[in-house]
Image (tube, rainbow, N blue to C red; front, side):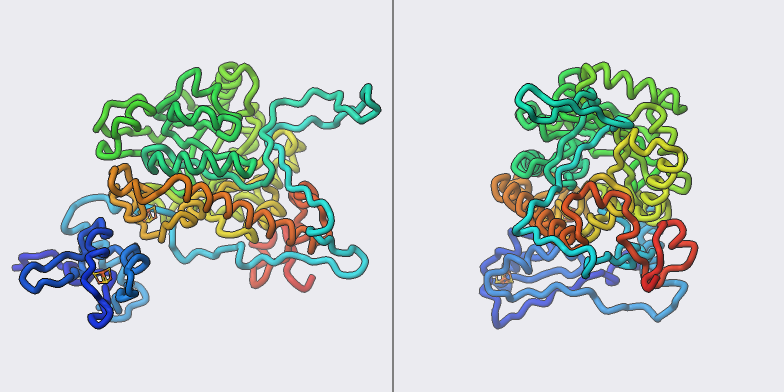
Length: 508
Ligand code: SF4
Ligand code: SF4
């Protein structure tokens, strides 16, 4: 008979401690939120327990003498292409617990990352490149419905003036926004840091489904407020507080699945903001219980426009699934101003691992199809498209825009900028980097000033890189690149993939 879990010794990571370098300062003991390091009274030295290590690398990063090295544990299993170690580990865990496997962050499964198989064009002789250091380069982006044509008149001062009345727009200095991450899933320090960084860089962050803390209302011009199925923290002032309103219908990491913020994460501040009792679970149902058709969605879109006195564009966020283009067409016709398409690699605080890894489609394919469908139907200008879900660098951003996006959301990259090592344990509430946690001790690991500076730097750095890439293509505005797929070429892709992406193969 087995008295312990079968997988007790099949842990994923090993802690290598160089005894010659270790000075027993106990930094690793204090920093590890999983108690993988401990002080051994009898031996009077720091010891560790490999089975508790989750591979967050916090101790390795902070050890003052570089005595630690966290490494993957070599496989304990016989090689088998069908029964790979992850399947054995999962079955052992479920045989122990009888529970659904949970996972955090985006899907790591080995499905093609099309960004890596798409290359950008560059100018040569006849269409010379532009030097962004010496010539103006326009990254300004407006999100919202655009008129079919604009009428311009000459103003009193002799300068051209726009005669056409535009519907409300979200004005961004750079086409990169911080993705929806709720207050509760991540802590207040990070929310404040995103609000400040969005303000400093002229972009927007998104409240996620957690409401907006009253001290953050002053950042409203750079805030998109979200309305999810749980309606947490949604009230009239909230809807008026932001520069845009987003209805969350789906999420790339868990299409068809609702949200669940465990009661342990509902502290007083989260409770006040979300309007749920301290310590009680906040569960968002999978569907909105007032949306069962496009007509229902239309009613909600107009109810929200009414609530904001028609001052804020309304976005609808959907997960990338097989018929995403048809869904997007319906959303555009229902009066949305913006559609956010969230690909299957989008991050999450918690999702059933089977859903995260087996449901949805990659952003690249979904985005290309949505843009094409709206163009074919002649309604592309009725909405802006925001791409989200696994955007890793400015190269991905510029390819997304050439595939048809107006702007992108970055979520996981935002968290990595402040220390996240994608350990995937966000659902435990013990984030070692002080991000996906409301534990007061752990949350202090994120200094909002430092985090805001890092996020500002990230957006500025990507903005500069986008300018350089645009210049290299002979373009001086991001608008000229939107949906300009002639600037893209695929490498090693099948005819079907090229057809869906709407691009030619390299060499053609
Ligand atoms: S932080 Fe480094 S030096 Fe300090 S006890 Fe841990 S391993 Fe030793
Ligand atoms: S946010 Fe924290 S818990 Fe989640 S993956 Fe990043 S480091 Fe791990």
